[in-house]
Amino acid sequence: EVQLVESGGGLVQAGGSLRLSCTASGFTFDDYALGWFRQAPGKEREGVSCISGTDGSLYYIDSVKGRFTISSDNSKTTAYLQMNSLKPEDTALYYCAAVIAPWTPDNRPIATAVCSGMYTYRGQGTQVTVSS
Figure 1 (cartoon, rainbow, N blue to C red):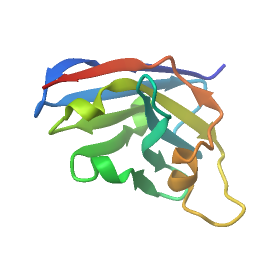
Figure 2 (tube, rainbow, N blue to C red):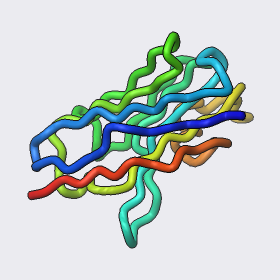
Figure 3 (cartoon, rainbow, N blue to C red):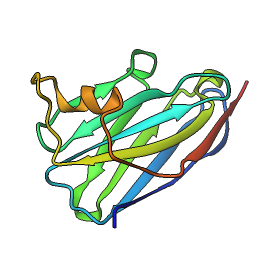
Figure 4 (tube, rainbow, N blue to C red):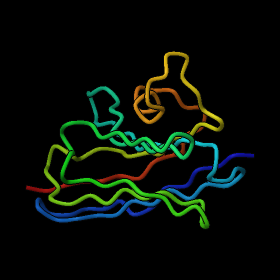
């Protein structure tokens, strides 16, 4: 059974940092892709950042480029999202989602496709609140 468990959320002041973790079980980090998504009340879900172990691609939404970094530790089947220079508009429920043996019919980078919603499994999420 595939499970994804997030941790690391919390309350932080604007300009601060948080590191989110997503620990996966039920699959290994070889042929996979994983992403971080967020959803704030009254707003649509956003694919924030995604990583693919299958084709090595990465994706960041424009609003977090230069501030957030996605990474993974294959030995721990854990992915991370380092979030620096946080802004109040980053406040949301963050969750990770994954797909095993991903592929794209049009040869788009897999990370881009995952962040567009191409995933199978997701976690419950962790709340991030940034105060001004």
